[in-house]
Image: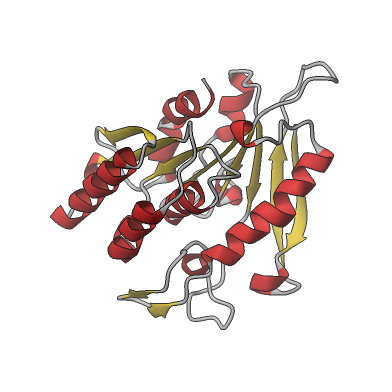
Length: 253
């Protein structure tokens, strides 16, 4: 079962609506309760027709075909251009201010986004769906800027999220801030992270260096890290779809 309904995030886009999605597995007993995976870019997860570039992750097919005992809760991103007064996806999915070659200075509003997920969205999901709400059963995942936000959640909201999956995380936008964030994070016991990059994403040596440094620091801080370079992988929903079995295995088994 996939529920979809409009929500607002007033601190980000006022009364403008975007969609929330919650997948709940079918065929289980009424008393069953499930771990929860929170995800970014919810519109790109389920259906090709709704996905930004015409190709989704195929999450619904994977979950149903494999009868995965898991709730997935996701929020659509902001589709405004970055120069819009309310900012766009880069702004909402960055914990830090940074400079973009295309858009100039981007105001990082990732904290506002994460505070809404933790203080508004998660309580609603826990109140209305058969969740296991404790940290032990609460995970988070995303790709690209959503991957950066996953790292942010694991580092700065570790009391809520015990495990995460950061696919092709955009750590190069603000390399120094990301490394400082990892160094200063309060990492709880049993924190697990899946982090990957596609082979074809390493166009610049700096990208490979940033990925390697982040992995080194995460392991040094005690994160139980599964780090992969995906053979022939690239920066696309089609590539991330192929990684679902890998990160689901890390996050839930």
